[in-house]
Length: 71
Image 1 (cartoon, rainbow, N blue to C red):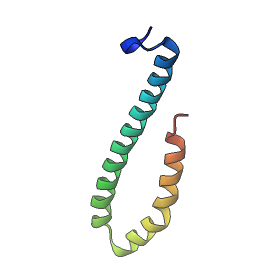
Image 2 (cartoon, rainbow, N blue to C red):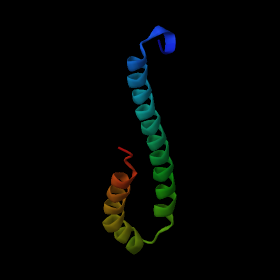
Image 3 (cartoon, helix red, strand yellow):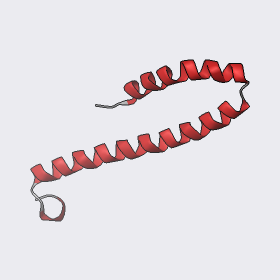
Image 4 (cartoon, rainbow, N blue to C red):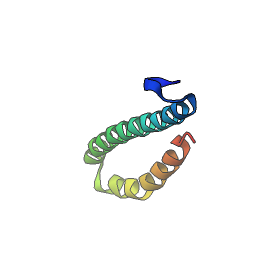
């Protein structure tokens, strides 16, 4: 038997879900931090720099998100 009387196979599935939840929570926290940092950076940029950021950052963020997925 595993945690709280559950069979070992169920415990393994529960642990897998807990790991996935932990990864998602960590990613959410990192995304919040990135959003705050991006707001501060964006506010400090000139209008021309903001336009460049608008063109480049979305693709960079998509690439970073794909690379960060651990499964």
